[in-house]
Length: 227
Image (cartoon, rainbow, N blue to C red; front, side, top):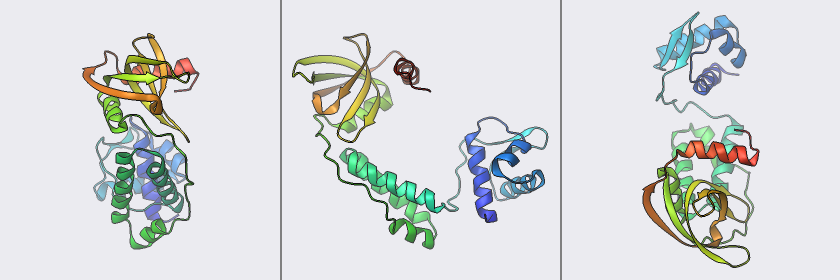
């Protein structure tokens, strides 16, 4: 591993920790000696990295610090390309465009050799027959971000129609369908709604009364999913 890669790994490890981490633990996680770890931290600080702390107290990367575009490993490049291609082929139009824009921004800051590897990636995403959505998913995604209630007109698997007010908290993308996880005011419980069975969606502009992260935690517990 080159020195540049080692310094980047150290920054990535620091990003994973929100609280001060001892130098000994950082040395173990990055696979270097404690002496090398101290030298690497000093080097990063000299280059402008917002690392606070000292030996004996621990180190923390100041919130808001943006990593410089040093480099990506080949596996990281392949993961980025494959993920963006999956989004481009499976997500709604605006999100697919955003995936292409994000990949272009990444390519713009990569060194020439890594940009060539990104462009020449051989990992492909196969075609999918995704059921067409009955609503504008960008509106739904916006409601999730804003933690707003939405009113929907829905038709279940048996063809029965209903009108609901739901609190959307997550959107799952599957091979053939997209599913909204939401609290349903009609059922007073969590429910899952396929977007291809939604016939209409109306933004209420009304914030739901409980935090989304708390609702997600309760939903995971109800489903037996580890947080």
